[in-house]
Each structure stands twice: as structure tokens, then as C-alpha cells.
Image (cartoon, rainbow, N blue to C red; front, side, top):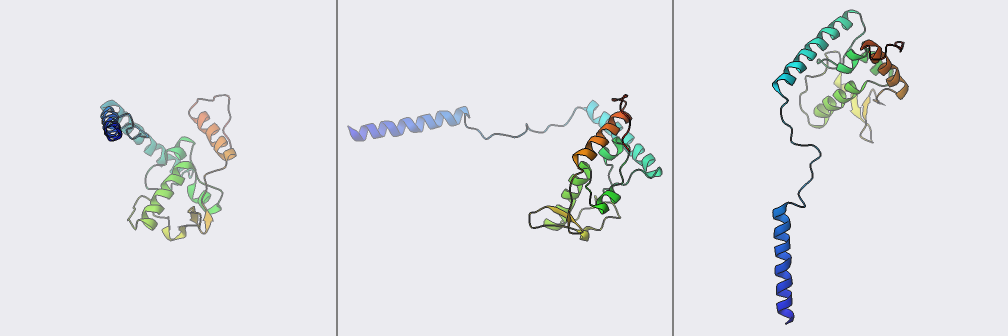
Length: 173
């Protein structure tokens, strides 16, 4: 009697396991849905926007208001009216979010993965970057940080004025 109960219990557990597995009740969670390509219209508009950003970056460069750490356009810097990333990096007072992300990725690829990365501007000396004991990105042995909250607020207000979303706001200086 005991052995038949064990056999029935074991069979029941296998059956329940099979049903739960078939129903995918405990399937792995995904942080984001599978990436699919944007529509053709969206791609066209993204390309147009990128072309406009490049043109605005070129104009800001002529006005000495824009220096990027990457060869690519820094959209954040353009949309706030220009940032001199080189001066900000050298001063140690922080960098904008796009620059922070680009630096982290490029330095990680070059230093940790020994992969060649041509995304950084020609003026950038990769040998001045490293990591501290906590794994934080450093430049000239100082931790690279994102701008302070007050600087980000000023830049955001400036962006709103430039985009005419905050007509009553005056640009931060």
C-alpha cells in the first residue's frame, strides 16, 4: 500500500511538472520585449533628425559652443545649445549624460575587452582614463561623474527655452 502511494505521488508530481512546463507558467522573465525594427516612417524621421542634429552641432562648433568627446553627435549637448565637454572633463566637475555613457562604453571596450574603439574624438587620450578600486571610471585619477543636479536643471531649462517649450523661462548662464 505504501509503495503504491509513493508511485502514485511520484507520477502525480511528474504530471503536474509536465503540465506547468507545457503551460509555461514559470517561463523566464524578459526585461524588455524582443526588439523589432521601427517602421520605415520612423526610420526616415530618425535619419532626418540626425541630419538636423549634425547641422546644429556644426553651427555650434563654429560658434565655439560645442565640443564632443565622440566623433558622433552628442544629442544632449546640441539640444541644450552646446556644451564644451573637453573643458568639463578637464575641470573634473562632471560631464553630460551622453558623454558619460559614451566614455564608459568606449573605455570599457578598450581597457577591459582590449577591443579597438574609434568612436572617441581625436583629442581624447585613452591612456588618461582608468578605473578605481570601486570600478568607477576615472580621468587623470579623478572619478568621472555626471553633472550635478543644479547644473542639469539649468541645462534642462535652457533646452526648454531653445525648444520654445518654456517661453517664460530665461536661458541659464
